[in-house]
Length: 526
Image 1: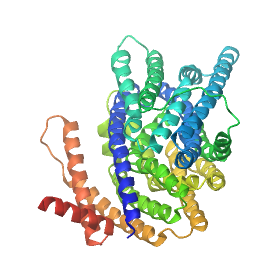
Image 2: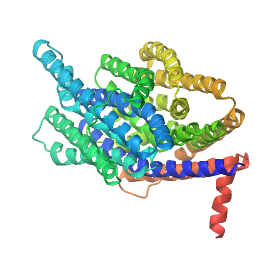
Image 3: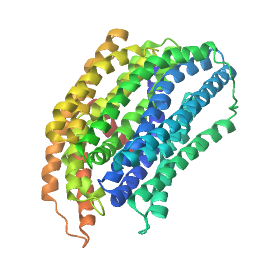
Image 4: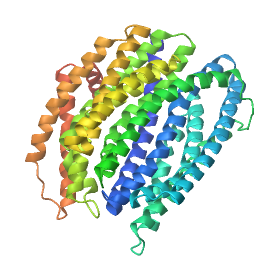
């Protein structure tokens, strides 16, 4: 085994571990946030309007900031950092910062007045009117979070992952605090409560910008407005960013279509999609996105040094590591979906019907969980190679497939059909990305990845069967409060499931699981 590759793997695991740990903390707080939100707003018209208004700026933020900009900026910044030094890299970062401030400021000014004019001259339904009023408050969130994405990209290139990965935690804290302090009063209407929450989210966006900006400045980075929009590096970033934006816009357009189709399905559809997606995002954020966040700067360094073998080895290791965790997590969520939703959300305004709708949506989303994780990793490889066109072409094909699937499945499964179409089109997207990347760089341990995938899936199915029957058989009556008994039942079942997965994996000789087991045995002996 190449010692350099082994060192890269250890560095990647350490970086992904830092991101995973802080992301886990953020996801846990996000779960608390969603539990509290479900209690006060449930699956309702008001929450539908907020979800719509919150998701639109988030889609644009992911497109402009975390999506196209990060994917285009990080490889270019890394290359300049390696070849020309920190001073020139800092200058390029400031030019990009200046362009963002200028363009986003103008965009927000225009959209504000467009919405104002629409509200003044056009008559909408109550839900659409509320959503537009909330958009007026939430649109500046794009400005704050796009700059946050730039600051995070710079930090990642310098191997600083901890503080940026805690950014979502701040949003959750402010969100929870806003609901508890201002929305729990009985003398305010649901519309007033949701408006207060929107202002809280905007405050959180500004706080996230400050938290990511201050450490960057303290580390020696000098933030300046530099009007040099013809700089070759900026032209290079924009050249990469345009096809990247097209690629990311396909994903965001799919979500936007889902939001609008859910609006047509009636009250509660957007809410059920929101809660189901949030639960699915838990393992995706902790493992898939965490590895992807750490992967892009790592393989960008490989490409900058023309080390394609290092890129292949790192990508293969990343895919195998994520599949090993995400596949059993998907099966576990599918098997235990109803009790999990019932335990977390079913109280206050969130009733048993909302539980059924959310659980079905969660099941359909989880069918594509491995694909969402894999896409994040493989697309990072394309962007590190400064090829944004291939993911765009594949994304266009899958966007059409998603739209066709939406129209078909929503007729039978309502909002869950939208989630199923997303899962199936994402699976096709992932497969096509793998095939075309292999043609571009050659084989990257495809048989090893496929073997791990098939074994993990088979073992996870056996684990899922065991989980189902154990959950039925184990019914504790220790506590007088039913929710505590359900919590204990789920915790014990999950612990047994993890043990079963580990034992089956060891017996079936999955190398990665055997290595983990050997490491645990050595730790116990010591």
